[in-house]
Image 1: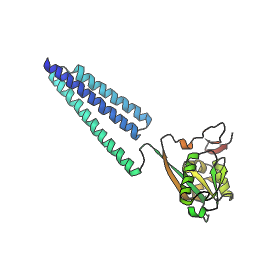
Image 2: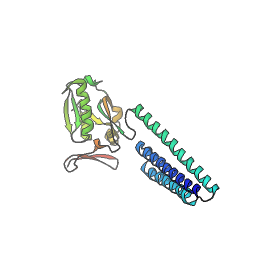
Image 3: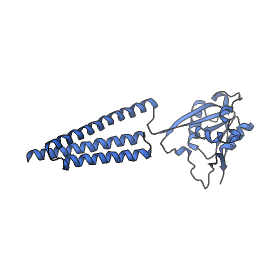
Image 4: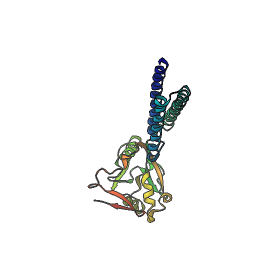
Length: 245
């Protein structure tokens, strides 16, 4: 009788450790964002199912000595494997943060100052007093970060800013020579090159200055605050149409 009580207490403690180890590995996977949502949920459900099976086995179904021994061995192996997995996930997460200098799961955004390929402008210092186009209401965060970086390096009002309501208007101004350079979040480059007229945009232009920053998975910097007041872009049938409400 006394041995049964001891085993039951041991089984409960082992069950708690197993659940804790499984929970920690789920937290690590969620933090690192290494699995897509479509896989993450099934993986969590598998962990839950395994834990339930082992808890029922070691606490209720294991009656004989042999059954109890096997239950303890399997639960221990599972718990230890979860612990080792947690350790390696933690070390990987820590390593990635040190290497990339940002948290895993964040998104890198790059905002560039772009000129025509034949332009004599080769670097930031060449832009002094030049006309530089920017988007008026889209990607305000990214544009602001780039302008702050320019101000820090070269001082305020280093070049003249011209505002445009849409990316195509901005590119058109660059091609027509209305501006000397343009500010663009690199995430929009694909939208521009999807338009037949500017399909060679990447080879006909070059970057003379860029600024990178990190946001969470939801990239708030690319969101228009109010579509009833501010302009936005729609990618429809492989074209990049601009609308201003």
